[in-house]
Image (tube, rainbow, N blue to C red; front, side, top):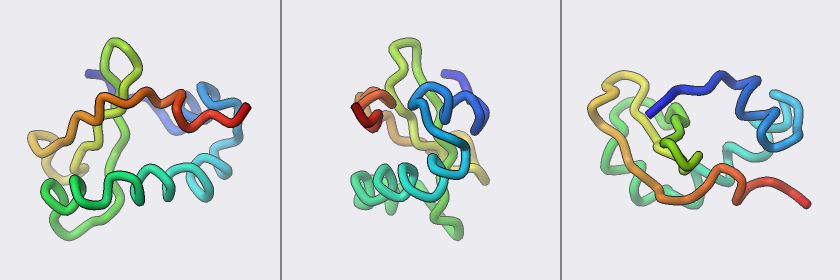
Length: 80
């Protein structure tokens, strides 16, 4: 597991950091709302980490031992 920077995530999707945070991350959070409710406490803003295949891992930033392996590539959110 690795924790990419916001800039790296944005670059992977060919968008700016602002577009990633404002437009794409809300979709990710919505798509995994149920799963996030099981790992998040006070915050609703997970960190996005990646596995070796660039699949997203949603991580509770207050407790990295609480995470959800999505098995979905970050590239699934890349616009063509």
